Length: 196
Image (cartoon, rainbow, N blue to C red; front, side):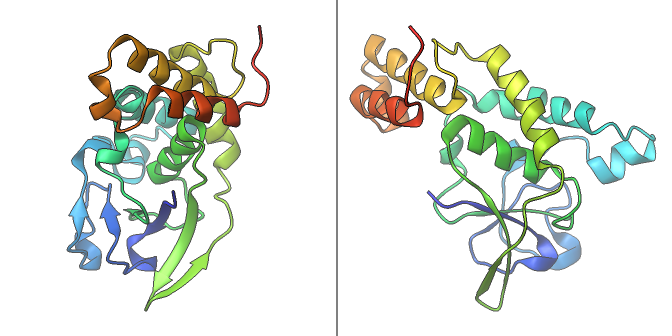
């Protein structure tokens, strides 16, 4: 699955989705807005005004208030193939879209790329400079909240846990749209060795 991130000023894709409090209004954005992925506190507007510039605090805040709700829920109800998740921040700036991108990478094994998409020309940008601190922080949070079942990969453990849930309740196949065997195969492919 391909999912991207960008800023409103760098993207005019019809697949752009706002996850920003401004909803892209200053940029004339008229596309879809996903309230469920929008934090109540904005890094630039709310936290910097109060001189709370601790990035790790904000990563934890966004995880606890927004992302944690999607560990067992279906985030792909909101995000579809080719979606471009948009906020007001420049690509090199710290933004919750980059936190969401790393969350998708860790939990589902999806590499989310930062892009510029103007006049139907897609340009992949370098990884955000805050990537490693976001990844390290989210890994700790997710490993604390997910039963790793002997897996070292968060995505493998997550797929395995959903497979166990499906095994216990076959009506959940409709919720996830995937079978238990599909998820077990995914878990095993995401993690080459499972600890015994």
